[in-house]
Length: 254
Image (cartoon, rainbow, N blue to C red; front, side, top):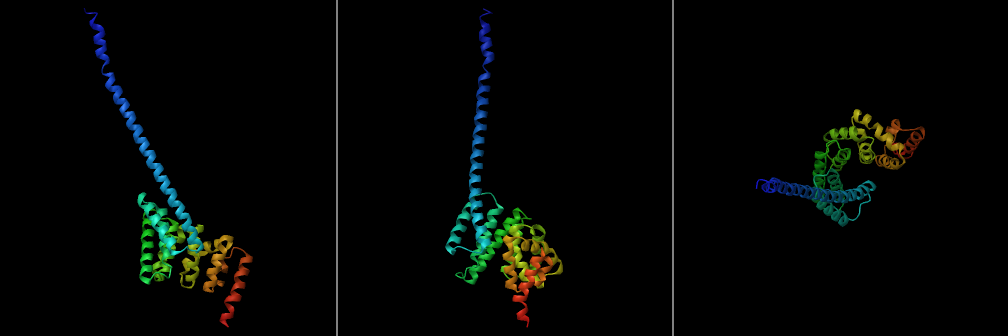
């Protein structure tokens, strides 16, 4: 009788293994479910980020070329980009793209002055958000300088932003494209330290074929070539600046 009770005793001892096995399987299923949720969320965010970056690339081209599409196109793009941004965690590139869209819309004469001011204020709000996420973002800093210039703020209010933008992005091509015309336009009134600080930017733009035309156009608009010869990257460019000065500036002085 003692021997016959042994198997039952062993069976009873093995019983606790079944709940343990079910518990282990439940943990694995939970871990797998969480992993799938995380993967789905990551893919979703990646798709949204790609869509925003695609819009930002198009907007950057419009802004850089200064060839804006129709106002309705800008407005539709702004709405699409805003909807995408609302679904994502805060993203600096999205805010910068929206700032540029608002700034571009503010240039359209179809809008009354009050509406244009509202657009510029909206652009400022988006820049603030971008800088809050990335305080040293050189594109946000240069865009701030450009926006202040467009809003005709007094120069003394704009100097700190200009200094910071030059410190962070003087040799960045996208920043140069924005800052170059502002610096040339304001040149006579700029303090000596900012003029000196602008030297590498001007030299770089004069040396680069892709940006030379832009900086020369800014000099033509301001009828100011001679002050920038000291930043010329080579003799040929110095001669070009002197020639342009002789053609467009000297005759008006007679």
